[in-house]
Length: 490
Image (cartoon, rainbow, N blue to C red):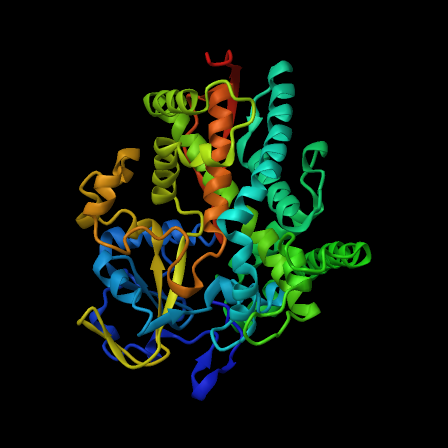
């Protein structure tokens, strides 16, 4: 397991990677896979391309807390709902930046997602940017979301006319990149006019894949085994930096609105913290823009892709969702902002897709002081664990014996109220949870509604879901055949 950046945080608490041996005094009580190999650890049957799905397999066999060993280091995984609920206690636990997340720090630095807790810029950026996700701001983004969605449907109409199937993950990536670029930064990547992915997307996928690959290589060997990959990663990072620098330079040349009331980039450049008067530095602006462009589209594109997969596999669900869209939107050419929130069943479809395959499949928590997890497992200050979100979302104690079954009615309001808290975490938890979650949910619900209203969607009967991992999750090879629907009656 490649070692992440190390150092010392406040009051001597280490940051970056540290093995569970240092923080879990009773580590021997936590089960691990059988057949450990000397030096290598729990690698038999593992695939470096699918570490999340490997861990899910171990979780089913070993229970709600387990450990894996790789290259001499122990890692503790948690997914039991009672344990995760305790980890959500913000008085005792906080976000831990480690594993693949810390491997992204060369490109994202102290951006919102990759900052260590003791670094001040994440809180500064959060406070400055939070108004950019208010209800009023979201209503302002809605028209731009509609405009980008129209480019998607134009693209799909051309494919339909030519008798071609559509590449769902690829097109959802184009859609969500254009949406965050337009709404947040006033930029157009021209994704739908390209026959190949935009170079920004290629570089982004490269950095995500490299960050994950670092986790499967012993730290001392990484410079030798990943020499070529490291050079490509450096080139990818340089491309991301150049793209964002050009975007920021163009905005500075044009001049922002000067009052911090514009998009996210205006807020980054023009807005001071309301209490301290501090502003984001130019370097941190770059890091925040990269964070939003990457995280703001990669996870949403996966969520849309999984939802479309399940809609085509469950025609009765698709019919019910489509009927709701027809009833709520009627023949309105462009649904209004308020009309999206009224698609309650379609939102359940999205939530259920995120339950089964949360596109950000894990988050890490560390102890702020010596404590005992759920009254069972002692943890020293600084000890950390990785919450395996797809398994939390399948805990049979919460979701039932049929937890692997797709059923949007799990998110009926009464069912939600009956469940304990902290059992559904597709956007992380606590103060460091995803700042853009309402943006993502509005965008995804709007797009699904528009696609269901316009098309009948058909998957290849022979397709079987295969999940690809690049820190985030995405269905691989999902293509759909389209039929154009007639317009609903008024």
